[in-house]
Length: 319
Length: 318
Image (cartoon, rainbow over all chains, first blue to last red; front, side, top):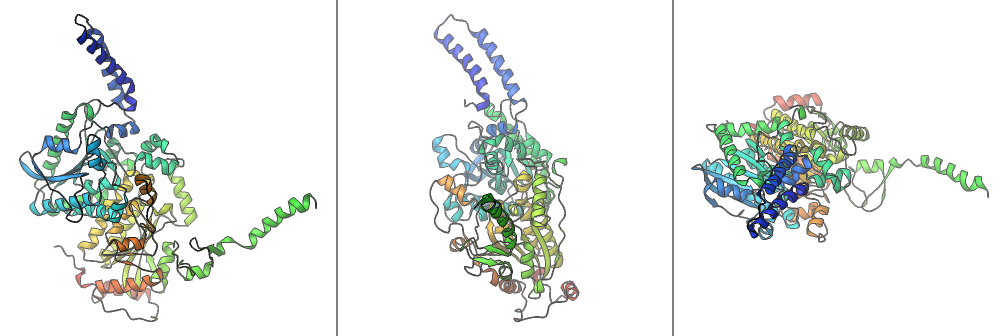
């Protein structure tokens, strides 16, 4: 279990309880269960307290928690017959973007998402979920495929942002993102999106220009990272708390602004403390969103999507 | 030599000498350092007469040079809700807005206009880098949507001049949502079979490059313009190596296949006329000095004369 900075006191108590139990296992006859149970209760109270009202910066930390379920976990658990399809037919296959065909509850779909990796080796392989132009061009290709064969598209968003590298720029990072957003707006099939962790700027928009957008309770979606915003507007990257506050990047604020359609509740203590429950809840949300769109003609799906984005944000926080 | 000659007189002199040469009459080319007289510079569309460096130009000045006889009509842009997030960093966002409005005399960071270029009716939109870095927020989004709607309504091509540091952080997620919103605007033109030409000017970066600025039917850039998604500083910090000379400049992008053309600002008008007329299947423009158009006659001709309307202007989709 990885603890976040603000969870340190919790880590201490949970650690103590664990220590007590370990001691008892070694010395038979020692009865520690009562004390350990008291510590458990104290920890549970503290957890409830900490997560009761997470401030925006803490939410950013939870959204980036390394133990949160990632794209791969959702695909493994929610879909059957997942068949990854690789490459942009131009330059390379981007491992920061997973994508392919699969069945959701028996129904064939196309699923696309950012994958961050879960240990040092896979994180490097996945480039920490930061896609290069090839990743967006692979997504464009898969969305085209879905459009031609009438398959709904499900995107799972979890990226710090598009990769700021030399090669990525030379190969047209901006153009790739713009075309991916454009493709999202063109396809005549249902497109639903779930922000499962970080929705980082243009790299997220390129997948999340959808008919329906859901966000996990402690995920974030923002035009810039709080650190980046702080260093530009406050001239001090340490002001990320203030920036996180000002940017209104939490699922709760985004629902108020009318940018997202629904919030998927996370278990107490965040998705990392109840991975299976979180995955199941996301699965349910996807099914509900797809059901809402079922029976709509391709033209209507395209028109709805365009109208949704044209109307977005017209009322600000008063929406 | 006393207190008066050493201290008071120089002080007085410096006070007066400042008035003798108002600094706005001359500007220094940031590239070659040549001092340029303001009238000469304006006549040359803010391009250095000595080294051809393209300096920033306001949308108004650009439109005066672009449209026939400098005549254009502004297209009204719907006003968005002010300060939608009640954003505050070291300053309040409304205060930053007021300061920018005072400094530029403009309402916001984009100007939309309609008029004729080489007697070809067009709609044009230009971003103003001097207004909060040209940043894209709700207003710029509204401006692009309004420009596209007007172009579709009048069956005219849209020419867009981009210049921006990216999305406007003070509008948070709503500035990010202008990426899909402006892409919808581009789709409207596409559906109507109308040309959309983008002229990328210095600098065009971030979410602006990653949406409407990279989706043109023809992509032209001004010489030396910085065009990128992530800025060079961010990249250097990430990869920890020096970037090559000219990286992310217009010529570099042209070399890497990301642009159709890099065109000098003085040649731009002619090129835009040539391209739009070909895309609209109109005969070549008559070269030479035309009499200035009569605004009224031109306006009615654009709506009433079917010969002037593009052949493929009928909605492509039924």
